[in-house]
Length: 70
Figure 1 (cartoon, rainbow, N blue to C red):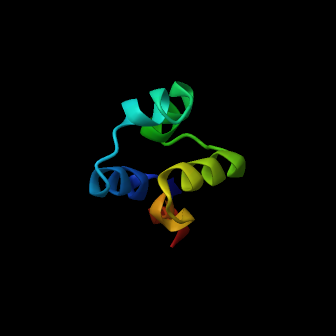
Figure 2 (figure 1 turned 90 degrees about the horizontal axis):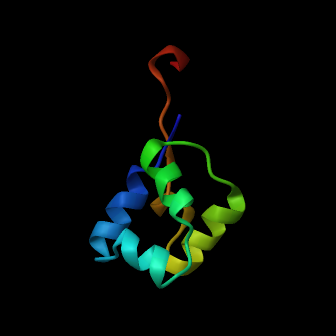
């Protein structure tokens, strides 16, 4: 399972709000909602988030094995 917990931690560490991402950086509100609900996002979106925030992919998402995958 992909977790976007690192994304939320990165925003908190850098004092960036979702309001800033949407209104100043042009990130679509649907993208933020997808991240909130753990739904898939494209690699293009991941690339855009990394560019806008100035971070790496591992600061956006991480793979967390589900219990039945172990």
